[in-house]
Image (cartoon, rainbow, N blue to C red):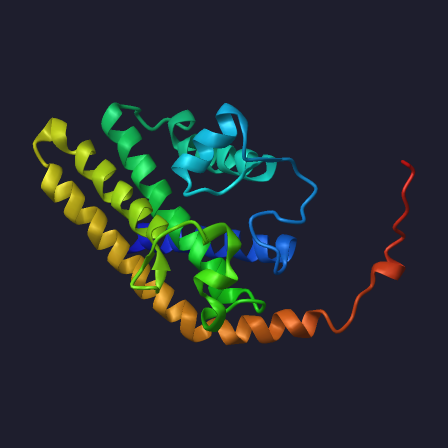
Length: 209
């Protein structure tokens, strides 16, 4: 359980760091050249599921990529079943919450100091639990525990499976706490790396209009 949690945390952390490099302070792909949808069937369905957040091409393909990676084990010989599918999805939901929160922890433009509803437009429509974090996180980890519990129904071990998943989430919380303590080191490095830029020496040119 410890090693699985550590692996999920590592994926979460590096996804967050990649997104910080790509998005900067403009979260939810605000300034990425991708399409945005809040209307139409897909846009409304996504908004309903995701607490009012827009559907973007960036998030669509990134989530398809991540789900594909989580399912690659089945292509590599792991036996697929309804139970293993539910377990895989449970781990995916556990990871996504951690990934999202790490973006704020490590992003020098936010940090926990600015982790507030009024500073995050894509969470503005969400209910914030005690004003500390959006209910989306509760829903994500709740879905993770529920899916894990359902995976154990066939073997009459739903409670045990759910408890194991809660143990995994507990390990993730420990890793998150450690990451919060160490995050100032990354933010220092983030700013240091931006004191110098070699774009002018990279030979960049554009053929297209």
